[in-house]
Image (cartoon, rainbow, N blue to C red; front, side):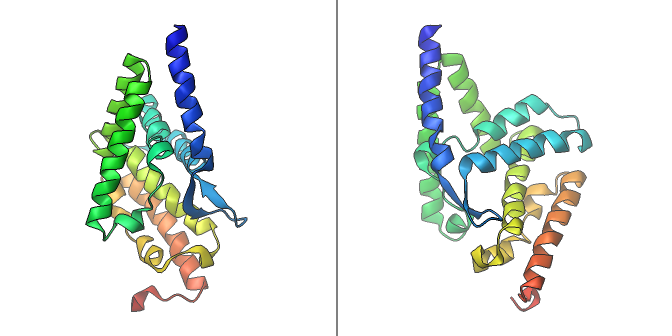
Length: 201
C-alpha cells in the first residue's frame, strides 16, 4: 500500500504544474487562466448538465475523464486549438507528445489505476462513448465561455470565427446543442458590441 500511495503522491506533485501552466484564455479580471482552473469548471459543467441530458450517462466515468483529460499537459504543456487548426505537423507533434505523456503517467501510477487513467484518456480523445463525447463537448464549450467573459482585446482574430465552430462538438445531443447556442449568442453579442462584423469575414 505504501508504495502505491508514494506513486500517487508523485503524480500529484506532477499535477501541480497544471496550476502554473497557463492557457490562451483570460479571466474577466485580466489575469490569464491556468489549465487547472479550466478543468475545474469543466467538471462543474459536467455535474450541472448531467440531469438535463436526454440520454442516460455514467456521470462518474464522465467526471473522471474531465478531471484527467488535461493531465498530460503537466508534461506536454498546453497548445491552443487555433495553433494546430491549420498546422498538420504541429497537430501530429501534439498527439505524439500527449501520447507519450499519458503513457508515462500510466507507468508512474500503481498498475490498476495507471491503466484506468490511460484508458479513460484514450476514451476521451477518441470520443469513444457518449460520456467521452459529452466530456469533450463541455471542454470546448468552457473555453468559449471563458473567452466570452474576457476582454475582447484578448481575442485573436481566428477566435472570432471559432465562436461559431462548436457545432461539430455538440450536435450529437439536443441539450448540448441548445447550450452551445446560448454560449454562441453571448460570443456573437460580444463581437457585435465591439463593432466586429462577422458577416464581412
